[in-house]
Image (cartoon, rainbow, N blue to C red; front, side, top):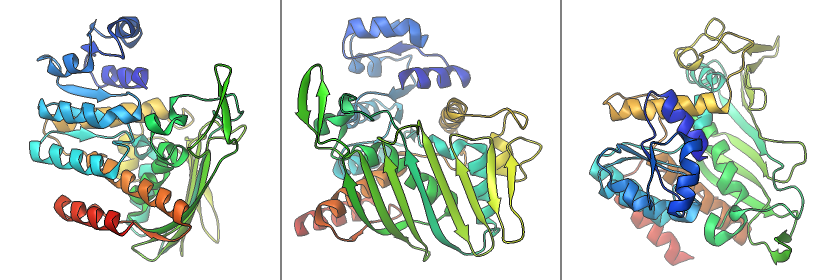
Length: 370
């Protein structure tokens, strides 16, 4: 992800000043590939530099909270890869610290920045879908297909208690809530594994994290929904798909084919080609950079995300920018999924609109109940 971030930094007209890794040697090896001016001996040294304005955290999940905490204390803007933290408590603390310090934050829920998604959002919010009643979809990958496939995310002590949902399911949930304006209030989840053991370096070890998850949910506006998440679906490289169905129309998007937005109606349906000339809403047109037939993909959306964070640092207020509050939201939903799967029951999902102190109290009460 460091290379994706570095490319987006340069696309925004900024410079990658310094890079830090797990060691000075690893940073020196990475610096040329990332286009960094220099390598430093540690993340702490990078955070302390006076010529660094924004800290991009692209490290393994378990390190996010500590590094973000240090960056906030230094008064730096922070872009932290998701998950923001591997616990709700840390996510709450980071959100509170950032808001009290007044620093700009960002969490790369970058699927918000596809032009087709912004077009769907604008049309849904102006009422084109009618009353949304069914919100469903999937997020499927295959990079862990095969018992010999593994990396640090499989280890719950490094990646967190949830892998498949915590890694990619949160993207779908963020996208659903952002696009529809609905919020998940209750859910029931089942997690599963294709492999109970994986082989790493000739050694077979048991796996604690899930390969996939399925969930049903309800929203604050009366809709129901379902989601299937998998990192072991052969042939699916990164298929994030949704269909948001209303009484008047449905809107469907497939990230593996990002150049179209499907709008379904009972009389006729259409696949709208993405481009400044074909999209009709302010959100769609703002992020459509290329003519129809020239697909914009993940890196383009990431570039738009970073550009909006940097605009916020300059005092602008880009609409729909995902911040640490959204990272906290993802942590709350992930915890609900883990809890539901363990208890085999429906679980309530708290919102993040309330003051953080109330959320802290609510989280403490829920833990005492458990």
